[in-house]
Image (cartoon, rainbow, N blue to C red):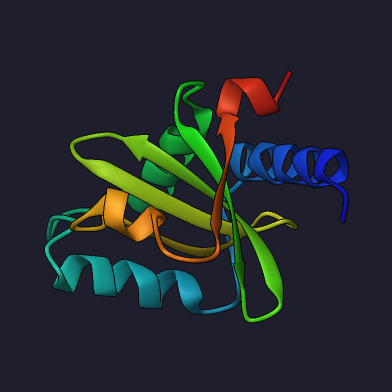
Length: 125
């Protein structure tokens, strides 16, 4: 995939997540419960709250956007700052893979596979 095509695909994926957070069947509850168990989300937080948190990250024009390549697939990753840094990762079809606050977001994004593309605002122009 050429760089311009990839930028367009990532921008479209962001638009899809902005419109509606979609998970693979059953994965929403698995990820949600894991975030609660790890203390990333409060005990009274609902799945709808978690999905709104994800949308808040991608609706903000300032977060940095990355392409993440892993296991032969390409994903979009948006680094947002809410109460702490959060990372949302989703397929180019806009299907969620994960959303969590890494302990060391700089170290996490320095791993092989992540390539910075710009801000949400820059990609959606």
